[in-house]
Amino acid sequence: MNVKNLIEVFDELGNVFSKIDANELFSLDTRTLADKTICTTVATAFELGNKQMENFFKERLQGNVSILKPLHRNKLPLFTFKSTSKEKVPTS
Image (cartoon, rainbow, N blue to C red; front, side, top):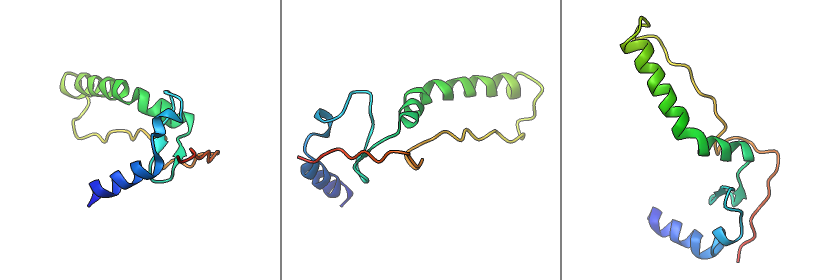
């Protein structure tokens, strides 16, 4: 069922990738472009995760920090972040 819904959205919108810049993110459900801060978060998430994993190993497995000590939350802006602009991508 979800696949059918997704195909319907793609059919309705047409080729959204031809309507936006290569460095922009498009939300299919709201049909809006993601804020630039969200684009930065997505672009750097893998690198940030690797740094945090390395830090975890150094501090907790090789260092003197307890493995039970709570991890800090990232609080990065994601798609649920309320953008200041609601620029919609035109449908075909």
